[in-house]
Image (cartoon, rainbow, N blue to C red):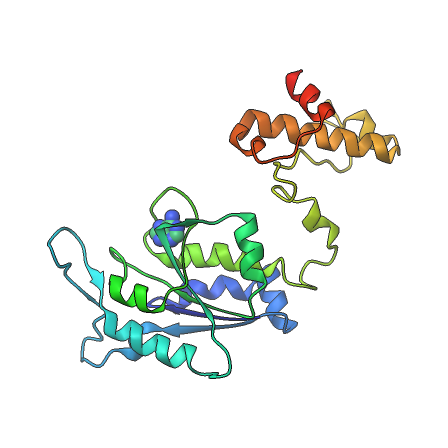
Length: 239
Ligand code: ADE
């Protein structure tokens, strides 16, 4: 997968060189390029913003630098078209299934807005997706891009060594994942649940399902509405 990111703060994307995403890039499983939006300004001050039509606080990103950037970035390979993503708190909520949808693309372009956002005409002209990572307002699209790129990259083939760890993830079955434990068996007087040390794989799988159900019921009950619950699941939740 190729990923391009257009931003006025290219250094903000440096964490993509680290850890899981950095290792995936070093192994050519993902090819990430960041671009400074100001490259596509033509005035001495390299201006990217202006005051909003209709008044109000803050500034809006001007369409011309964005159009110049997107023409150059998106048209570098005329044989294919990228999916163009604009992170914004006004976007469609980002979820694990949305991450999987993006992971199936072969080219993503992220447009990081700052200030009050990017001129709506350039968003209409170029964006395929406007995505929100949650109901809170960040100072710009860069942190949201880091989140989305990490969630997508770990789903790419070969990135996560043990693919089973993906199917066990929170949300993989529509449920939150329950607690996990490692050695020692007793720590500060707290013992690891006996069943996990029993070697009984069926009992362990049942225990994990029960913990996931109970945690989801307590913390995110609305998620249960979309899960196919068995009779047994329902009896666990009724406990
Ligand atoms: N930009 C600012 N806030 C954001 C959010 N919650 N999600 C995505 N992009 C954003």
